[in-house]
Amino acid sequence: MQELEKLEQENPGLVTTDSPTQTVGGVAKREAGVLVRHNVPMLSLQDVFSKEEIYEFVEQMQEQLTDPEFVVEYKIDGLSLVLRYENGGLVLAETRGDGINFGEDVTANARVIGDVKKKLKNGPEYLEVRGEVYMRNAAFEKVNEKQELLGKRTFANPRNCAAGTLRQLDPAVTKERDLSLFVFNIQDIRGMQFENHTDGYVYLKKQGVRVIDDYRVCKTADEVWQAIVAIGENRGNLGYDIDGAVVKINRYADREKLGATSKVPRWAIAYKYPPEEKETRLLDIELSVGRTGRITPTAIFQPVRLCGTSVSRATLHNQDFIDELDIGIGDTIVVYKSGEIIPKVKEVRRERRPEGWKRYTIPDVCPACGSKTVREADTADIRCIAPGCPAQLERHIINFVGRDAMDIKGFGTVYIEELVRMGYIKDIADIYTLKEHRDALIAQGVIGKEKNTDKLLEAIEKSKENDAYKLLTGFGIPNVGKAAAKAVMAHFMTIEALQKADTEALIAVNDIGEVSAGCIRDFFDEEKNQKIIGRLRESGVNMEIRAIEKIDSAISGRTIVVTGTLPTLGRKEAAELIERYGGKVSGSVSKKTDYVLAGENAGSKLAKAQELSIPVLTEEGLRSLLGIV
Image (cartoon, rainbow, N blue to C red):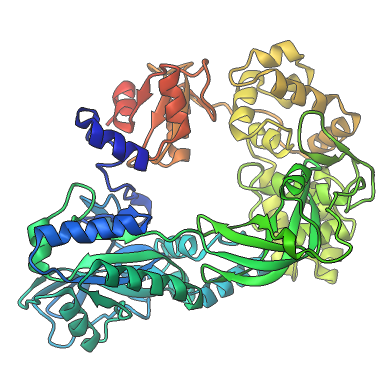
């Protein structure tokens, strides 16, 4: 982004209306709530990363304004929410959406957030405030604990959890997850007036509105910087995450004078702290075995707090990474959070090594089954190739029952681990024989009581009707994901026909190269897999592609890659629309790609399309091509 901004400053003629520097980013999605129009744009803030940029901003403000005051406050890591009050009563809560025109009405969910004031005493005729919805670390940990107990996927971080929770269709879920809110700005007010931002805070606090009250009012660049440093030093002691410090002009008249660009206000900036780093001691290296047999080492270290959460684990990737770090058990290591989310090991303090230190080497036997491991040629991967490895089986089953594959609802990781441990599941075909053990499963409480057990068994039965591409995805063949599985099955129509296809026939399929074709052939040539497929067939699992009545159109037979966030369509909806009109959806851009359907934040796929001169469609362009509105 910084490179693009510099390029556009030096070459104003290159600036376009759809440049990321000119748009706020994000879209308002219809499925979560009714769209509402913003009264005041919910702009983003210009990010800065150095002391020099802070001083430059202060100096610019001092040149343009008379004796300006600056307010420095926490930048809460959450999602923006606007609250509208009329005569003191809360009438609407809306999300940021596209930031300029529309957001989503989430009033029902906002009303169950404890920090959202429903009624103001002697409130003005109209008041619009903007705040940040977030999740305290304690609340986040509680939600993830419950997710684990239910066998559901845990959330990556508090911000993601808060965002998903605010857009829930059921306010009861929002209430249960205990969201919080800080108000950080008065967007608009009628029937009352304030001179300064801080005056507005004083008024809101008297009304019982929770505001960011730990702020500093500054006059000089030195004072502003000292306030930023103080926030940075304290951020590890907070009970919630922040992702920077905000510097804003205090007087509203000054703000009005400065105005805003189409993307950001000119009167405020956000300082982003460098990744927080902590020293700790490496206690152990834990090895895990993935679905394909790949062994991954994980550093286990004395817990440290980073960006507001306790961290005690970080991946070490592979033996090459371990060698490069020169790391061994007992070492003092430096850890940080990449993007303030993912824990990583940065370096080793070699000068503080314990006596008898040895660099860690991944053993040549599998930690799960004790079989000999192999290192693949020209890669850093060490794998267990034993067909009966239980760790691989668990992850293979997790993949098979997952959303992109057979999508068996309620089949959580905890159940899978227990069923494998007790010998009920030795391969994917055994899933469809679990009904034969119903009484034993209930008696042993493996899945739960009768109701839970029957619910899961019903979901397993229902999955037999799935389209065959889901079954192929569930096989977990290397280099064959959901998109490739769809393309293959659309070509061969049945698993039986696919089993008989030679490498040449496989390569003829769009998006299937020599590597993928070889992996498919290897899978079906293995006798064990042939027996499993036979048992699946006997159990009544569908082995054919479902016939879809397709509409002949300008994209019939064309391959389209979908990337980025579209204005109204989700990825799944866009793919279904393309397939309905005879097109093929691919997951990667290649010379065989006919179009790329790109939305906001399209990234590398869009760049590759432009590099290969592949036509790029907007959602509107696709609809026009199909002749639909």
